[in-house]
Amino acid sequence: MWVELDGWTAKLRFSACHLIPHHPKCGRLHGHTYAVSVKIHGKRTREQEFVIDFELLKETVAELCARLDHHVVIAANDPRLRITEDGDNTAIAIGEKVYSIPTCDIAFLPTDSTSAESLSLYFASELASLIGSGASGDISKIEVRIDEGLGQGAGCALVIRAGNEWVEADT
Image 1 (cartoon, rainbow, N blue to C red):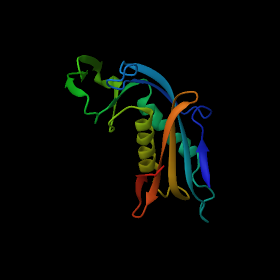
Image 2: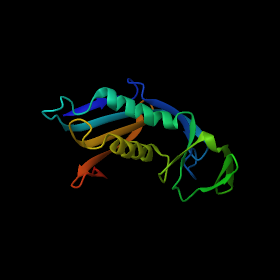
Image 3: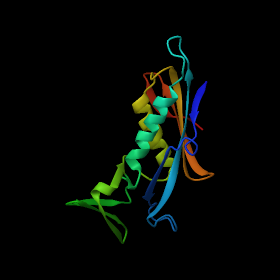
Image 4: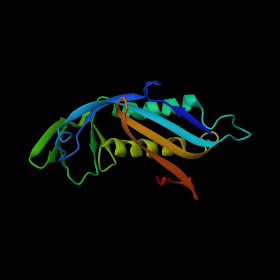
């Protein structure tokens, strides 16, 4: 069984800007209105009637969206970036380009990119941490799709392994 939320319909969205270093077009600072869709797979238990409660899932995804909404999203682990803080501002250097941005306007992610693929893995990992494997029923798989616009997005899936460790599913 699964429970699913469509990011566009359920209004699980955030607006943010990012860049993909050295890409001919996406290497410029630009923005999207992203939608986050999720599918949680699992089994209902005798004690719980749901794989996961829709309300809990929607609140959790909305909280993750709020962390990034109206921020400049920066991949803190991207080796192509040189990041230095100077008072209330952060300088982000990519080759010859240097962006100075108020630090409070930046959402640093523990990723190596801000591509839709990396954002989907970030959201799936955060959901796995926040809802765990026992939020309601017996959750076995978390799928996340990040759309950068209607009909354009990327996704990933995490599955639970022995020892309650979440790993990226083979696709």
